[in-house]
Amino acid sequence: MERVDPELVEFDVRTDEMLINMGPQHPSTHGVLRLVLRTDGEVVTDVVPHIGYLHRCAEKIGEKISPRQWIPYTDRMDYLAGMNMNLGWAMTVEKLMDLEIPDRARHVRVMVCELNRIASHLVAAGTYGLDLGSFTPFLYCFREREKILDLFEEVCGARLTYSFITMGGVTGDLPPGWLDRCERFLREFEEVIPELHAVLTSNEIFVRRTAGVGVLTPETAIAYGCSGPVLRGSGVKWDLRRDGEPRVTRMYEDYDFEIIAQHEGSYPQDRDDYPPVPPEAVLGDSWHRFYVRMIECVQSIRLIRQAMAKYQGCDGPIGEPIKLTQKLPKGEAYLETEAPKGQMGFMVVSDGTAIPWRVRARSSCFCNLSVTSEICRGCLLADIPAIVGSLDIVLGEIDR
Amino acid sequence: MNATEIIDRLKQRFGDRILRSDTDCLDPWLEIAADGLHEICRFLRDDPDMRFDYLHCVSGVDYVEPDPKKAKKTDWQPHLELLYHLSSMQHRHRIVLRVVLPRWRDGVHGRLPEVSSVADLWPTANWHEREVYDLCGVAFAGHPDLRRILCPEDWVGHPLRKDYETPQEYHGIRVK
View 1 (cartoon, one colour):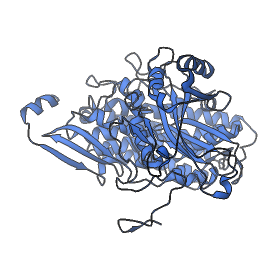
View 2 (cartoon, helix red, strand yellow; view 1 turned 180 degrees about the vertical axis):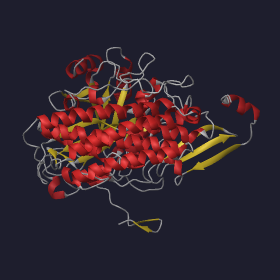
View 3 (tube, rainbow over the protein chains, first blue to last red; view 1 turned 30 degrees about the horizontal axis):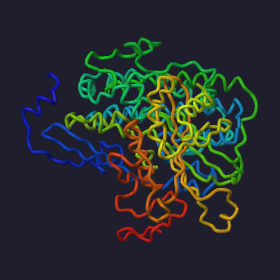
View 4 (spheres, chains in turn orange, red; view 1 turned 60 degrees about the vertical axis):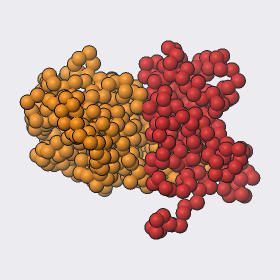
């Protein structure tokens, strides 16, 4: 079957304009997102996203409590990648305080953040399959994610809201035997990846639903401030782990990994079992955004293995968290880190007391979602879940 | 270009509309007059040596001390600040723009201060300016769709203002 050209459909079955309300309680909107769709028959002519249903005044709360007390609130922003949210906030305050952390804590941070990146991408892949009507990959992905949550539970006692990474290091060392269990998980997960590719990436139905749908050009992506896999799926090789501020790149300075983005027509291939790019796929479409996430998981495995080796090779302190009532130096600091969903930025303005004057969270999903009305215009109604799902948004982070 | 060079170029070109600057702090910034914002932003985006193509964040900070005892000790007059974090992917440099606004236009309580929107230069600003309008109470002139974004459309007040008071109830729902 050939893909239907929306222009032809519009010409063929032009009917009266209809407004369709999608969400806030709709399984394909990944939370409480409401989309108002203006449709002409099957063709969507305009999309207006409405957000704010999960607004919990995180920034206002941050003005009343000390930075360490605010760490649990960052967990609840992107609750699928709590470690990365903790990291972003912790590093911002460390930037303000000019605090350096010991190497051992740095490697622990890399380990847990990359594990959390895999967990987040697994949820993205699994629920994306669900959006497109395929139930099996969801179970495969969540089974693997569950193992990561078990590992995190051993580390910090929590399965979702960790508050593990904190200013000055991490809250505790890894438990004995954890590295072996982590290695066992990585080996098991590596065997599952080809299965996921079989049920999703190279599955014919999946390719037809995603290839060429919701094409985001690199220029539009940059203009709208998109980041993370959404930006890299458009072929922009930009990852803060390599291109960020010195404080962020220092964390990964002796690590070896690839930034996943199509460059000059091909992806960086260091394994031959990546499935090939289907001929229907256009750079910047939903399929590419999904594919980037899948390969990033492989890079994260590489990073975790390196971090485990480095961690075992270095002795010394694990770092001392700052006091709950530690006074902050006067000034402002803004820092962005590479969270699984994009560039998560935090800003802290301090007047010299222990409580920040102003706290700001710049959400990556907020910017990634703002591009929907641009890329959904002219698509078919059934493609809306395919496009919104491919952006991999978490409303907790958008609404803060 | 490093921050000093960027600021020097801007000072040469825009002269007295660059009010203050600081390159020794963590994130080098320059303060610009509110009426020159759009023109300077256009230059920053389009000049081949600048090419600030990525707007990270627009944030509003309210400077007022609601506690009269503490207010005596502050070394600033009450005002609002807007911060624009910009960077260039091409040249890999970054800068922060700062715009200082009065808390209320013409000193009349309830009239929002106004500044020109940059949503036509960076579409990122569209939602970010809506958020600043919603939470900090700044009106952006020329914005294509200035509505509240996180709070409900009929919400009263701007919660991130320091003197904001939470309403007792909203449509019969207890808030406090």
